Structure formats: structure tokens, C-alpha cells
Length: 435
Image (cartoon, rainbow, N blue to C red; front, side, top):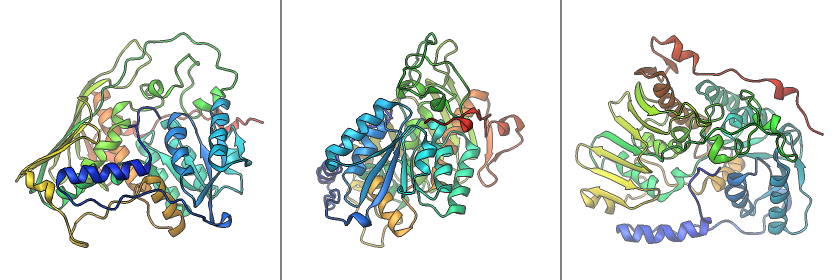
């Protein structure tokens, strides 16, 4: 998905990590490299890719192809050219090999030779496909975020009932910058956390386009899926466009917000809870394809008294406590702090109040498929994070302060807002199958 931050290989990240830590005066951790070995074919996790557009191809497919203990054996996409490109990449990595291809994800899920799936589709498909995959007996790696608040709880329930491993495709808890921010705050280096300032990129105003016939290689009806029907237009299915359309996404708040707001909630110890008050304002275009907030300010208050403000000022995060502050300006930018000695703080094994930094989200998923342990981003955390972001969008749309009960996962005294925890689902796609 093109709005996600750019990445390099795991090896490159590992080496940059050493330089970053050295610059902060922190002893570097061992440089991590992808596992390239000689795992027996019978012991490899058989992986199916659902959605191989930009992010599914450039990040998820290429990352999994580096791992020797999994094998990408099947590819599914509603666009034929995406499938062809993915098959070429797989054969470039493995040499001549058979790759099963599908247009309808249900046919891939019925493939008994697939152990786990990677879902890299637009937001409105994430939970529907994840639940279907779990019920088909597949472990699930799925991109962020959820589409609605209510379906997030359905996701958690489905994973609990089926016992499948679930991983949100979000890298922040594996990135040294954001892991250290959360660790230092949770260990009290800035005293008691009081305020969080989060900056996100602004959205994009996409002009209206005339309807036209979909390309011959695109199954547009299946692309729309459970979302409301809308005629195809030239750029509607492009990642930087559909993310701005409310029928498919919540815009930059739910997209980029998944990154930095997660670090904020982890630092505050609220990753399994949520805010209790939300208010916001923002600009939503009235005569454009864009129907999500383009510029915005959202204010949250959590049960522990921490306040967070999220603004469309560009990627950044600043955490303020009773004895100092710590910040990272830009995406994976320079970390600064007051007092500066915070940046020198290290913890002996067992001393930190925050767990060790996991490997990449892809490596962590494969490890957990084998061990059946919880992943870096299990379904509960994925749902709680997405809920916080959806609450911000709803506060802007409703133009009033909202009160939220994170225990009952319902609005307090607001039946109109409660109805917006879910949305109507188009069910025509359920009858739709391609040959």
C-alpha cells in the first residue's frame, strides 16, 4: 500500500540500526539478517499471498521470499497483471517452480496446500478475508487497519475460536526508534507521562473523475466487495486514492495513524484499552473523490489521565512527562530528549518494564506460526489500535465531543455514534466467483 512508509531490506535496517544507536551513545544490538538456510522443504510454511499490489508486492512478498523456512506457493489478486508480476518475482527467487494463481480469494482459501496467508488488500477487505481465512484453517498475516470498530471485535473472537495465529502487518514495534521511545517512557525516564503530541501526514484532495469501463484484467466487482457500490473511474483503485475515500478507508488518520498512535498507546500502557473522550475538527472536501479528513486535529483523553493530540503536521511524536520529554521528529528521524541523558539509558536483562524488541513483523509471524505463541501485533491489539483511530474520524464527522467506554466498547449516551461502530455491507460479492 503506497501510503505506508518506505522500507529497505532487513539487513540494511539492521546495519543502520547499529549506526543509529552509536549516534545516541547506546551500545548497538547485534545486526539481524534474514534467515537464509537450508530448511527442509517438508518443514517450510506454505504461504499464499492475497493482494499483490504495491505494498503486497514490494514489502510483503519480497520480505517473505527472503525467509528460508517458508515458501510462497499461491498468489491471488483481482488484477491479472499483479498476479503475473508476483509469479515472475517468485520464480526469480526460487528458480523454475509452479505457483498456483487465483482471482477469487475464496478459491485460494480452499487450497489444502496453503498453511497461512498474507492479506495486502484495501482496508474494507481486511477483516472479512482474515475471518474467512481463519475459518478455513489458515494462519493470518494482514495489513492494517480494520474497516469498522465492530468488525475488529469480530476479528478477535474469530481468532480465539479458531486458535489461528494472527499478525497485523505493522512494523513499529520492531523498529528501534519507536521501541526505544516506548521503553524509555514505560521505564519512567521522563517521570509520569502526561501528554503526547502526534503528527501525521495530511491527506490528499483527489478531484472527481467520470465513470468508465474497468480494465479487462481487473475484476472490479470483487475489488469493491463488501463496500458500497460505486462506478469504476480511472484512479479509484489506486492506493493513494482509495485511501482518501471513506467507503474504503478512514484516510490518513487510520492509515499513518496506525504507526505513530500505536507507539503512543504502548508508551502510555493503553494498547489494550482506549480513550474515554475524543473531540476533533478537520477539513473534509465536499466536491471531490476524497471524502476523508485532509487536515485535522484530534484530541484524546485516556482513563489514566494521559492526553494525546493528533495533527496533520507531518510524521512525528513527542511524549511529555513530569520530569522531561522525548521526541522523534520525522519518520524514523532523530530522537531528542530532555534531559539528554535519557538517550544513554540501557537496561540489563529483566530490568526493563517493556519486552525485548522483536524481529521484523514477517519473521515474527513465521516464528509464531511454528510456536503458536502470540505475535507482535495480535488481533486484540490490532482491534484496540484501529478503534482509537476510527474514534478520531467519527469525532470529526459528527462535529462533537464523544465519550467512549473502552470496557464495553460503546459510546456513552450517544445512540447515533453507536450506530456508526458498524456500516452496511454489500453482500453481492458473496455470490460472485470467477472461473
